[in-house]
Amino acid sequence: MIKKITTVFLVLLSLQSYAQQNPHYTQYMYNMNVINPAYAGARADLSIGLLARKQWVGVEGAPETQTFSANARTLNGVGLGLSVVHDKLGLAEATNFNADISYTIVTSTYSRLALGFKGGLSTYSDNLSRGVTPDNDVNPDLKGTYPNLGLGAFYYDKRFYAGVSIPQLFKTPIFVLDNEYTSGISKKLNYFATFGYVFDLTEKVKFKPSTLIKISTGLPLSVDINANMLYDKKIEFGISYRYNDSVHGMVALLFNESIRLGYAYDYTLTNLGNYNSGTHEIMLLFDIGFKKRGRWLNDSSCYF
Image (cartoon, rainbow, N blue to C red):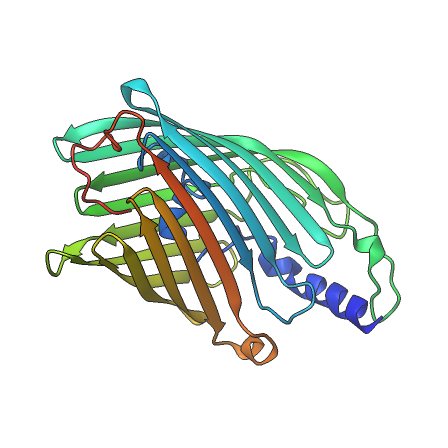
């Protein structure tokens, strides 16, 4: 009974903030087509990613996320992508199915600009009738399927990349406890901006700072600052800081420059850190170059 009450309390406490946000990813630099459709096709002829994230371990009903994504380059600068994101918070679950399309413009020999659109469906199931509140209130379930549309832009050259995106334009009744819901463009959008650069420290060592900025209407600004080191194209490790929230450590093994196995650990700096043992995130990424070209860019030194 105590666990059920705790679960529902966590859900109710998180409704106002979590419902307005897309899931956080610590290894965002290798999972970008989920938040930015313009990224589709930038990495390789075909790129497939799997990610699992368990947040705030030890807290009953804390967020869990599983992600599948795939994107590919086709002819004439067109990129295609697909993503499935399953998100769970307490008794509530959501699954987002999205398809991406991008078009890459040649801006110079070593630079490209891609514009992308995202479209799909989101299914929600709150299951709040299964929970028990301290006052024994019974909340009705809310289930449904709703459309989604997003857009983005992504610029990159041999060493630098920058992207902006709005992955979800339409509002949805996720985690809403009443029936006062109307469809249309959301007034509480999530805006993302990403930046990264690659520095050659030695012939084998590269320094890869990056940042992810997230603006959610009505919520504090979220900023991730990341510092990764890549050694001999075989191992990557780094630390990052999420402003007023958490610090992270990550490590990845690279096999034949085409398979990446990465792990990240987040340590919470807020008071919630007293009640959990951190967040775990694991990612597996496959890059396949059918035509031995790998990228639209005529250089393979970007490492993002």
